[in-house]
Length: 389
Image (cartoon, rainbow, N blue to C red):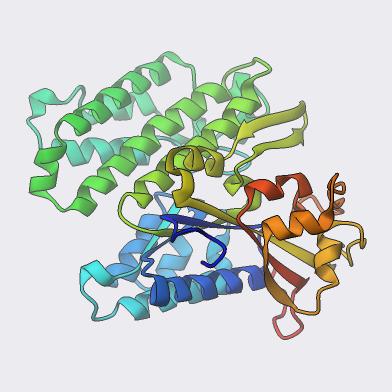
């Protein structure tokens, strides 16, 4: 907090590689301290926003078992992580016996998306319809549940993996999908119009959950539409839409209090993101850039850099790189002022460290001016923490 002018409403902690338990242990330690010393009450991770509701129900009210929360409440395989399990266990124990206003909350902020496919909009769209059908006059609804089911068809056509690389395999611009987008827009509009009624009939959490269903349904239908687009802009738009969905979820979480966010550095940085894919280079604005544009100084980004990930072929960094300069420090873990680090690197900044592993993204030295701090972890994994694939 000494690096920042004030306590941010959203503190984003990035990681350069997924699946490393030590980095998640660092995140857990930071969250515990933010809860106990700074009044933070929510952690949001790069996982399916709808699945995350299962974890939140477990940690806040004890719904289901820890095993069930880990199995059903995470996407991308994150439920198998020992550090994620410890996070959920600690949150449930912390909340035991506390009033609702003091409980810690869990959220996934990614859309229901995987690298190979996007989920069907059915769960979000039908849940939104059910929220409204139970609380407003049936004559106000733009359609029935049966109409939604007919237009949605089989879920397998939405989740077809081949559609990620072949737009012709996507149903995102079919006549049924176009009609679903109009109906989803009407349902979200009705939700906005009837928000006072829903708030009176339910809790704030109930309304927030309905709004999440609406964001997810419209976001997924938009994403599927661009999956069906054959133009060169297709991948730029898909990556941008995913981060836009992330940003909308994060801004909604920030409305209820200070949040710790954890995700890959590229999703949280203020700079434009870029990568090379099968059809060439793509660029898009990250969730962090979009949130920072809205929250300004109330958004803070602390990136994480690492020295070695030997089991992934990432060995001691060259001394003339950003990671090499940090590796020469005597500590195994440290927090570095990004402005001081940029000054130590000199001008012009050195080229980024090359990555021998696709899953690891070294920090870009020219991004340091837009970063508030850098957490450096010297070696992964630590000898006393065995690597968990």
